[in-house]
Image 1 (cartoon, helix red, strand yellow):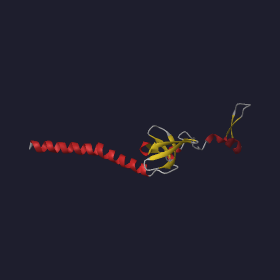
Image 2: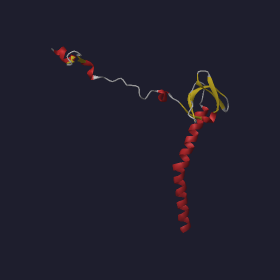
Image 3: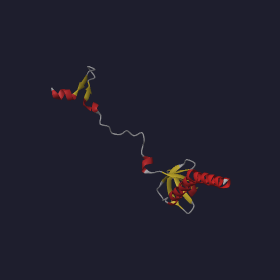
Image 4: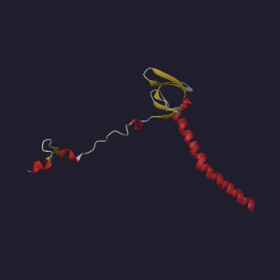
Length: 123
């Protein structure tokens, strides 16, 4: 009876390790392999070393990346960390258009008084 329960504990520990460590790592490896096979010329990429560039040419295991105007480097395909998408290229600090309620307020520089144009229209 004691041998069966210890075997059951070992199986439970292996199952927990499978779902917490091995399975997510396999999913990530599969996703990375799909990303590497889907590469094409013109993609904006980031390498493992942090070099950003545009793919100019792809061979079986090498890629040629343009990192500046006229500067092309040769790297291994496995050295690509990520492909930049349209969402990555958006400026996170870009101002969004807001409906500003203060559009109808005019600040008179001479009198330093605030004149509300909506109230002026009502008069």
